[in-house]
Image (cartoon, rainbow, N blue to C red; front, side, top):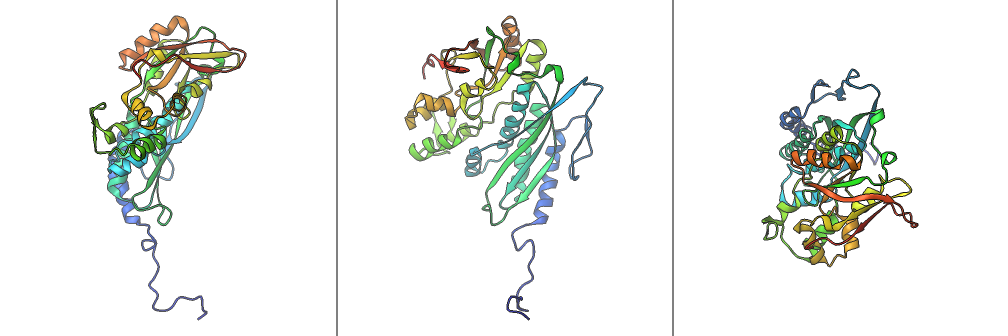
Length: 361
């Protein structure tokens, strides 16, 4: 026996002893199966548990289909969910971040696959996470086509987890939305967010929990509920609403307002030579934004580039169809309003700018 050989008294090494519980993973799959089966479409072939998800693209429905894909996560909003031991809402956030990027180019979300990394598989927690993901898929009209749960003992702590997902959508080649469709005089419509959505949580948590010493379980009068409930409010999913508006009105493009704030994200869909002018005076951000600004003495420029400030999605619409687009969104219970217009660019070449002041902010 060499010096590096194990002693006869050394216990036999196992995967479970190394921190990976295969049985718990199998239990988690069985617990999540009912939720995943609710998030489906007629094109899905097979069920949960295969090596690959199968989706039959109906070529009779599409003349020249273009596939669109998007990958995203939830960010540090997960830290709030873990602190409160509430795990059935961040899955909705995950779906929203993915499918609402797809719809910006006019793509209908078809299916999504998730990836859940955990320190230790806790079947009940995995089931709660997938319950939220499945609910988000139902809201978006797409299928949950499977995914992966990976256990990382030694790399992540027992209670830690992270989420990501990839979604695939389809759009007709001649219906792809984008900057090339935008024209001077186009109307910019804003759609209200449901709160912080899934961006800016590192700053929000620093201000409210570290600087403000607020408790997640504490009731906040401005919110009419606890701070934790406010911070875990699920992201509004706009995919079906945007597609409905695009079917009835001449939508040039959409902009999903995520990391970087409104001006930076709108600028991504405005072509060179034009400028989107966005008027703060057309809406009042929800109380959570003013609370963060006040408690952290966060300057307006920092708020604007970190948070959605109450607008989760923007549509650029042909001026003659603005009223029609607003009517469709209103009928679908999406708070929407005209928040700006597209003008020729100035000499500075800026493609989007915020002007005016928010009422009562």
